[in-house]
Length: 394
Image (cartoon, rainbow, N blue to C red):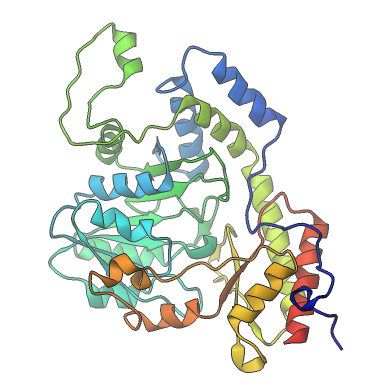
């Protein structure tokens, strides 16, 4: 007989909550931030250029443009792609709402393509079926850190003169057919939120190999103005021109200093994420009531998330029961994501359940387990112990 669940009065697996994701900050990071606080430039200073150069080098792109969030990065990329009123942007429903909202910010319409059942990434076949004369861009999300089918999507985009934007907010450090994600699509978007691979507090980056797009992105993040404060100081000029309607999406030197030191540790952190994923996969391989994530042979996941799918037909309980039981064991599981099409705002626009049946069905089964490089071996063991305890009960 299995051990009594914490939600039924038993002893929790852990004394305190283990979150599903968390930043890792060390003394090097702190010193870098303090150095900037004691410098002349807190924003629009030299650390921005240094961070962008380091980021571009890491992902193998010519240009990196740092902005204030992953959402700002998506908005900037959609703007640079020329998305505007009446246009359509094809994306997946199985993502955070920002992947679709970036179209709405520009008075365009998101169109939702269903996902593939194995990886839960956007289906190129579904994308093809939704192309129209109004399609301006495709926003392909690398779900959980596994790259989408970029070559197939690029072929589609090129054949229809559509811009492919890769939403790699889960996928910093991932690889697709031997190439690092970041220089494959016309533009690639990253997030540096604390639960992501590199933390700058809030933050985002757009990478590209196109110099004209890079210029357009830089201008958009700075009110649509063609120069910034440091450029004007260096030239001794006061004159500036606003030629586009842009936003204040700048990232500060304080945040960029943190990003620089975080990037130096990224490879070690990716290796740790892989270790955790391997340990989970080995431990859960015989649990037939769980469907484990599948990574295609021609790509490497960055393992932002480790998402399992609950097979309720093998259980005397639901996904909701499993979720509540794990939380009671102080395992901070989460669900990624409620389909964007189910959100009240998008229902009011005519979307809803049934539009993307594979994504809808997957959502009803998903649970994200804790996954971040600061997890100790004991933390990982606690997740496995709690999952065994809960699944044994049900």
